Amino acid sequence: SIVQREDPDERIGITMRDAMRHAVGHEGFHLWQVQWRINPDHNAALYWLTEGTAEYYWALISARRGAFGPAVVLNEIARHHARYLNALPGGSIAAAGRTKLDSRASYDRVYSGGFTAALALDLMIRRETGGVKSLDDVMRRVHARFGQSGAQELTPTRLVRTIRDETGLRVDRFFAAHIEGVAPFPLSDLMREVGVCLDAERGDEGWRATATRSSQITPAQEAAWAGWIGG
Image (tube, rainbow, N blue to C red; front, top):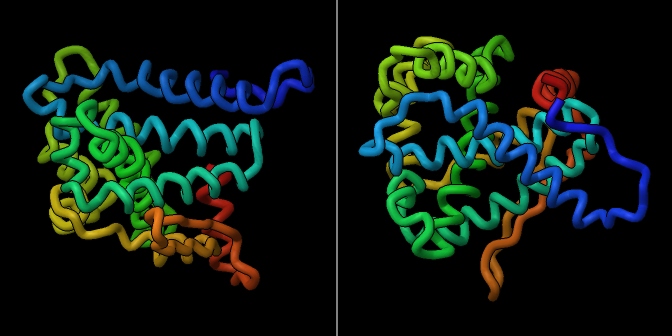
């Protein structure tokens, strides 16, 4: 397993341990993605997908494996959401792939915007299918369709089609508004479905966000939370 439980050896500082865990988890997910056939001409438009899902799944899989508690996932959600909102005025997360190393804003739209896109897609799919399908299923279908020898190339259009084929959902408008466009993801509403309160506030130094479990949670929210964080 890429993700291991906490080492009790306190000689390794928590900051170093977290940085190492993040690097191994993120790059480990890329080892799976590297099999996907992506033409260099389409690569920039899909940077948000490859980098964003690597960011998203290292945290989610770590929590599912017991490497750390759900609070760490919530902290990652808040951190990425704030960075995404601060970078959003610079343009869409799809366009940012062409300049991801040219500026901090482009970098944040690819990585934090991609994380936020993956989270929003995951929660939206779970809500619209009653928890029957998730982004996990989409990732497996993408790998089966575009990660095998002789497979066709993955493009943004084929990604949208693959999501529809796997989940039955049409996400054309979602992509046009939030990935190709600059409309913010409706993340607070989606997080409420799993009993999480996501608050974002804009101050003198930009956006700040917090994500915490709601004080009052319905049985439906608890079930949705367990399905999401527990896999």
